[in-house]
Image (tube, rainbow, N blue to C red):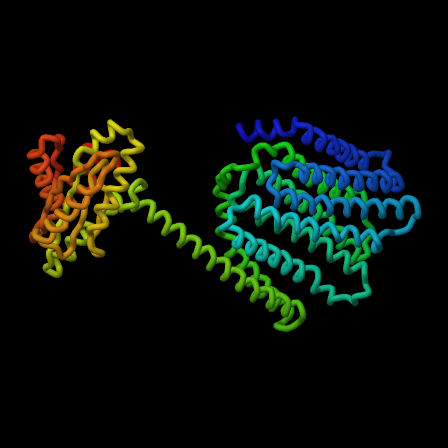
Length: 522
């Protein structure tokens, strides 16, 4: 409902209203061509005017985006190129209108095709600038590979179904050249829009790209029909193709209007959450591409008997497709590994002190005990509690308390060996695992920690530390070892009048049994 109301609100903006008015004209034109009032000469004039005016309006919208400073620069440059492509398209239709309506000559092929063909590289260049503004940096390489895969897939289909059966006509046959070039350009632009849509885009980029993709679908359908009619010299009704071309430009006009109307929400937003269908499209793309290449290859072998230009083209395309997919999957695997390492580091690290957290400690202690038991080595555990921290925190505030905890964590870590593991257990408590350390070594490290911390002053206040020591004995479980350290710490705190009341550890399970109430905060 929220997305629906947002769509309607955008259509009520000035840009949305201006973009909707030509749609009424397109609908009226479509109704007129099926009426008894239809005439071919009038159609050429009306269609020529409509196909010239719509791209000019689109170019105007594009320039309006270019001059809005609240848009990202790469997005404005992209729309500048699209605006230039639209102006070129308007020139093509204007020349065609002049030649058909006034001179009575066939504009195809001719000068109009040159302007028409310029629309494709300019628009494609504009779309390729969108990822810099709309897609997260780490996804751009994969996005461009997705674009290459989709373009190659479309090209292989066109080669197999349309271009190869023509037996590659002579270069001087301009009619065949332009008839083939237009659908290829449409599919390349459609591929670019699809490749962008499936990414984690910033809102409302998906709607902009959706209308661009829809426009390319209309254009591709019209150009494919046009190519089929021209190459097979079939008489065709131009009004139907005119309607499809108008719908194509109208869709692009809606894309520009949406971009203008939603300008206030395009900057600084988090990526929109992709739907399961888009994730599925992204995951299935490489497999679908390989399946497509192999299917076309098998069909070419069957139809061409293992030889022929069509088979050679499909074979080359299939090899390139496999290479692109392998490179894409390598980049995806590399990015997934980076994300896994990042998530793992976050899951195991205490956000305040940078030490390991309690979850990691609960994972590593059983392994260390198993290693000590298997190789009959010593193992000690230290449980540390910062004395006077609560009073310091109440006096100077929680921000200063956080600074102290980070400083204390550095002091503790500086006195340890490379093989030792320290973790924040919760609140102002820390725990240290000392592999290959007996009670004498553990007490020596404890004394160094106490002495070093006593030398530190925080806002003129010195803090102490109470330490509980537990030494591994055969048969002790991780919970029992930790409980012994907790009891030893409790005895040290009880001797100190400045200590605080502690709750001994329960032994029902290490992960679910807190060392004391403060540990529940972690």
